[in-house]
Image 1 (spheres, rainbow, N blue to C red):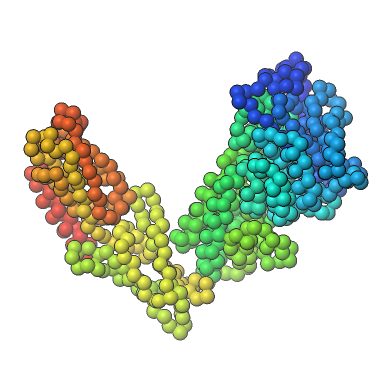
Image 2 (image 1 turned 90 degrees about the horizontal axis):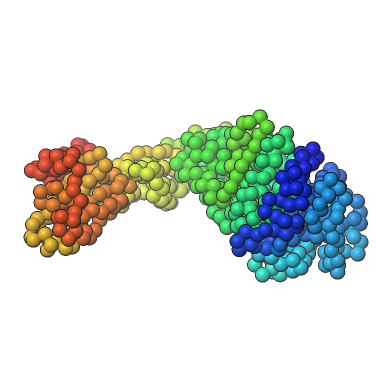
Length: 630
């Protein structure tokens, strides 16, 4: 759908390029199909029976202007503003681009969709169900695409008939009822409505289609450019569903670049990945509810930073997650927010936007409403997002005007050597002083480890006891400690500690007999560090290293078996340091002649280390550990 002038210009351009009779690769109304062409049925549910009239006639004319490949069916349930004028149409190609009259064929459905009155209610789930069932049964195809056309009201619903809005639970009900009669369900739902690409919408329909296309922003009245979209499909009917969905997004944005004075955006969602969004939002909300009292102001700031112009308390989910992660919140909340952002990114497989002023709108493809306890938002509780997540609980807190409170006293943290054998601090005790003033009843230590690849969540310890122990977790740790009562966190403190362990690298050698009994060396090599080298006089040897003092958790450790003269690498393996003992089996090359020569610089290094490298490394390691313990 386009502004009239742009629409005419586009059709004139098409006629000139093709001599008036065909689009490139398409002859008449038949497609010069790509290899392995697929058949397509489009169910256009056009809800135009509203006071604010939409350009329904222009849209139908655009569909007629487009070419169709063999096996493509465009079925339209059209409900214009007057009474008794609903039509069920099969779109046919109209060579007279400038003729506004509808030339498509009225379908005799035997009363399955159209009642005797000739008037349907597009706000009724039964109407949508009947239309889907009839179209799928009468026009079976490889791909079944439902296009919902009309006004949209975000989480409240879409496709109104007068004042009767098709709510999201009603939409879900219609799709569920229709799916019982479909052999494989819908393949794609396309939302030609305002603010349709929401987490609320996606969670409602995730079970009933593979993909969804929609906009999280307002959509100009012209909506999608149907002539361009269907011509593109006609030129390549064998394209995949993701390719077609991405083409809808791109055609819409391309039209908007010269046909819209409003900022626009569109997204293609993989509905199979939407379950991850629900789980991530639920985890983020659970943690946020507990921390709201201490961190209310930065939580609300994250909302304000990710709102956009299409409505108050409507946030971009990706931007909101990113903003939360950067607000200096407790690590577990920041990590949960980051997970929500990654889940959103996984689901939004193609997104594009355009602003007339050339600015970056900053949207990421999916919005989320922040509901309040007001009666205006009562219907939100009926949505699946309310049933499956704790988001409404956190959201209602974010809609409350209050200041963050000061945290209570934190715990005392003690580091100690639990086994008294290696002089390494390997455990920590976290203990709170419970008083009448701070009568905490629940305690948590959430452990995060800094590794070579970044921060890693090592899990949480929850207890009703005021003393918790952190053991069997090695590395440079951040203890995110909290204490509270009745689900509310009253004290939060972050403590950095290092817990160490001696890790044994056990190497078993194979094919050692082919070296005529000569000894070999086993070297542990870390990037930018001097290697540890151990003589290996039989088929196995062990090297003890202190983690994270010598090797940090998550670092890449290269294990090399060296020839006697340190000139060749006879075998090599790479492992990740985890804090646990490592057992590896190394198969030697058939002979030194088959091995890899060391670079010249490495030969110099090995010759320097050849005499006392083991003694120096071990003594230095123990001295460093002793200083750390002191």
